[in-house]
Picture 1 (spheres, helix red, strand yellow):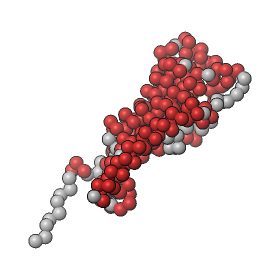
Picture 2 (tube, rainbow, N blue to C red; picture 1 turned 30 degrees about the vertical axis):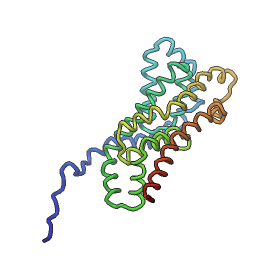
Picture 3 (tube, helix red, strand yellow; picture 1 turned 90 degrees about the vertical axis):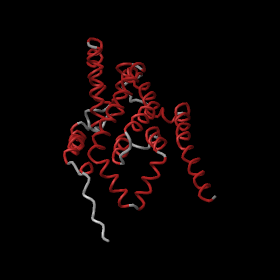
Picture 4 (cartoon, rainbow, N blue to C red; picture 1 turned 180 degrees about the vertical axis):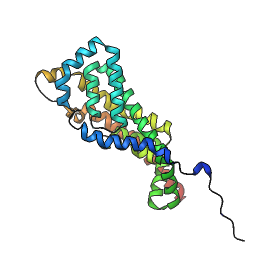
Length: 249
């Protein structure tokens, strides 16, 4: 007896309007990447440093709000300048509370981008991956078994671009709480280092120099970061080893 196909589930029906926020972000990212390519660099900060410091001293709360909104926009629209924004936070507000402003703005922008992209593409793409099977489906299944560790490693490892670490989990329909927690914890070490560098930019401007980002290669910084990477990888290795032993047994 031939079974009749089930009617499509209305909840799973595609909703084109859901992709609108993601498409808007993409369009702004393309235009902004060209328009602001040279406007969000170190030279621009050096030119406007006196005006920024004067505005901060006269209108501190407005300066904080404007900085946070600008940083959120840079991250949410994947514009060039996220590193420079973190340095600026340190320059304007010092290591503390600058690192808090940087961490809040970067996390909020990442979450906004994640939610927009996941709402438009995440569920549909994950369903297609599962239906097609093959290598991509196996990779997605492996990720599902190690989501916390992989998400954290994507954040704490400097080789993964920040916008990629925002987009990839959204496209794979990762849960928002996991993304939010690993984002905040994963970017904290880098935020501390860059904010600290930014807090010393006043002296750098005086001699006409450039910020020294080689600080990430110093043992005092690279050592703890490497330790965090090992801590993130270790549970994956142990879990994989146990699964293989159980499979053999």
